[in-house]
Structure formats: structure tokens, C-alpha cells
Image (cartoon, rainbow, N blue to C red; front, top):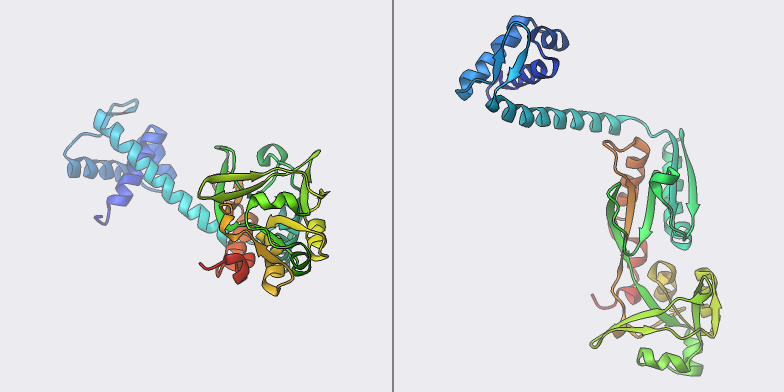
Length: 311
């Protein structure tokens, strides 16, 4: 770009916005003559008239209207970059209002938040660890962590930060007593521990060469707590079907043994969601940056070989 061109474009956009060379000159700290010369240079460079000039007002030509919209957007984008970088330089303050699923949040989000608060003493956090759906915009949340399929919402921005895998497993003691199921159909003859959602257990989903398979029989034990389900499985009561972020360490240590590996369902994405605003606040940006940094080498529950399989 020629040395004066950026300044000439700024003068042109300013003149159109304000409606006069005089007002644009005052806003830009230039003389009226300098604004006029900038526009003359642009017209000469492009070989077209951009403005109709009268003693009372300025009006755009057809060509001027085309370039004005493009140049206005370019200048606004540059202003947004400046504002975004200024935001990043500011210290996170205020209260970060966050929600995440109960077990996942306690295990894998709380440690990140603890580090964030230690790093930024002026920052506070209000955390809702819940499995109920929360409307971020309506309820005034800064950010949410969600797992699985999302409903379309143009008011939210999303970023995928990892995946979690449902795993079917039991203790070695249980398997020694009751045997090892070879297919999802074999589960009907086993003691299963199911997650109780509302008034009925959640179905277990499996993939096979025949497509999606559903195991929907009631559990021998039905519990509304995934942490309690894990404890029951560790105690040898039966078979569980739970996310890898809960079972990863148990599979790695051998306390639990994965079953039906050939029938694993597709992994679920883990996403962070935040309201669609022109600029991210420093507290939201700080949380996202720290989370991504912590999980740069792989999210914590992906490490165990027993969970990752042979990939």
C-alpha cells in the first residue's frame, strides 16, 4: 500500500460518516484542506469520482458507495483487533460465572479454576456444577462446559477442547465370579449398574458392524450418581457404562477392566460455550487460555492406554 493511502482512506470514511470535510478534519486532527486532498488523491488513483460535493453536503457516487462499505468494514476490523489486544492486556477482574456437568466439573474443571484464581488475585468465580441445562444468555453466565450434541444457538460461540468416551467395565473380582460378556446381548445375564435419570435408567449405546445397538434393560442397581456407580463397580457389585473422564485412572491402574471394546460407541465432543459478544472479557479469555494450555498435550482422561485402546 502506498504511504499515504491508509490515511486517505481514513479521511474519506470520516468525511462520509460526518457528512463534511470540516467535521472529519476536527475528528481526525487534520485541516479541512488535508481531508480534501486525501479524497482527491483517492479519486485520482482509482480514476473515478467518489463524492458529489455541494456547499451544503456530501453525497456518495455509486462507485463511492461500493468502496465506502468495504473500507468502512476494513477500518472497523482494524479497530476490533486493537480493542481485542487491549482486552488481552487487561487483568481479569470481576466474577467468572461458569457452569459444567457435575462429575466432570468437579474432576477436571475445578483444578483449572483453582489455578486461575491463584494466578489472578482480583478474580472471583461462581460455579454451578449441575447436569441440568442452563441458558447462558438468560441466566447471565460467562461460560459453560458441555459434553455431547449441542442445540443450535446463534447467540453462543463454541470451541471443542477434547472428547470423552463411554466405557463399559467391571472389577476383576466380579468378572472372575460371573464371567466376561462377549456382546451387548450378554449383559442381560449380568448385574448392571445403571445411571438413574428422572425415573428411569439411561440406555447404554454400542456400535457394531450391524449399526447402533441399545441396551435398555433396568440395572440390577440404579443410582442417580455416577460417582456412586463407580464406587459400586470398584466394590465388585457389577458392570458400569460410564465416561472415560470418570474411569480413566481406574482403567489405567487395573482396578477396573474394560469390556466390549469392539462395541465402543462414538466419542462425544467436549466444548466450551460463551455468549457471542464483540470482544471476550479478560476473565473469559483467561479461563479459555489456561484450559487449552493445560490440555495441550491431551485431555487428562485420554492418557490411560486401557481407555485409548490401540490407537
